[in-house]
Image (cartoon, rainbow, N blue to C red; front, side, top):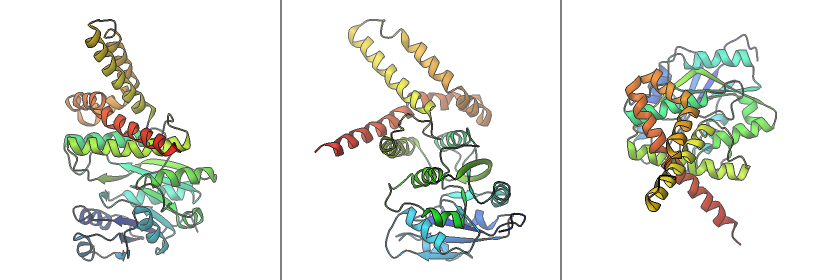
Length: 333
């Protein structure tokens, strides 16, 4: 392939009951300033009106005969593609007009041996507090280490078709999430390089309220922890599963325990370390808090800091404890 020529890109979109977002996803793809691409939507046995919506758009629709999960849908899309390069995106994400142009430029610069990732826009499609919090947090976490990221996420993953096929694609027997992390780690072990380009962006549709945000934290933390326990890297600094977040969770539970002990024993000796521990946690997470401020201003940053340090850790901690208990239970004879 001549890297001086803009590559033909196959945009792969897995869909399962995505009637609320798939039209926005396809509208975004078709509004691209880049012209050398195709769109392949693989429907994973949706029971809603997704298929009828997709059929209204000039894209290739592949319907799986039985529900197989996102990994199988992505692999099916890749096998039926004709592009030199695959661009994976989720059905609840919206490409920006320049997303593919920037992805193509990064691919031409880095070459076919590099797996290139993008991230979320700072502000999501649905602009309420919990959705904005999540989008800023993910963008910040995924772009801290652009030259050597731990993984590249499938909400914006660019990989040469040949490399993807040689790798065996996504593991269809893996967990229901984190298949992109597993593929990234497998490719790194094979000697390939990952690169994160913060200018390649997609806008996510979260529709998060407090309950959905906490539920998402529990679910992601559970599967991250199960995967990390298996890989023996539970304390590693890995994108959204950052060491900053892990200390934040530890700090929150330690503060809660100290306050409880102080209350039970009616002594200040347990409460005295609390301000110091909370202050140290804020110091370790200062860049994230500063990012909240830079994106949405001081009032949002204050709200986000309170949610991140006082509530969100309980969701992440609950997910982690659930994973640890599940792991221990499976170890029993």
